[in-house]
Image (cartoon, rainbow, N blue to C red; front, side, top):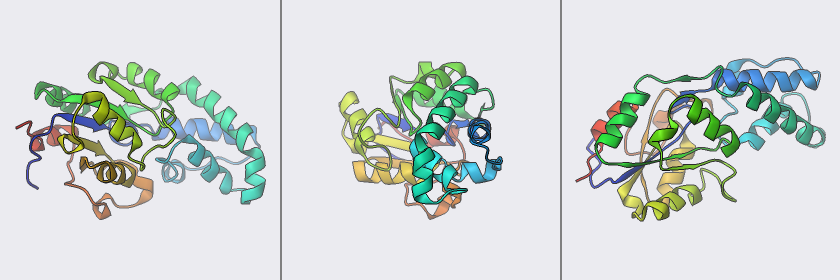
Length: 226
């Protein structure tokens, strides 16, 4: 993999990239399911539903037990219950992936401007970043409900480019899933993927990117501001 040159900023995903939040998802989803009288789902099943935003997660979770029209009738109740339970435990069952703090420090040391763009609702995202000691690294934070469109649509990434007054080619997106790569490609940004996240249960090696890095530390090593 060749170095990415003339990079001035990085847009970094949250779930599956900086934080392993599978435990949070499992606890909140299964507390919601318990309210509906449904049996618990395994962490592996739930994680495969993660990545396209909270509404999609709830629909996928309900689809395990209900036909589409029946699930629609439970959707708002399930979403409200999930939101309440998630906010109550947000970050309690989540942990930083290895190299995240060191990687963020290395990216900042290179003079890169940093943004966090996630499909997690911003009301979940901001307290979670604060709780895990990450919020100070980012000039800009956008969640899945910050704009009319979320990743894999390029809208959030293009907004960051505009915020930073940079050309998309000067910005690299770092994430664990095809959502991140597709959004970056559509925006005209560069993209690096990490292999340890969720990616809807599919191999990240099948995703079109500029390279796979083992950690944010390696990502920093592969980026040049010149």
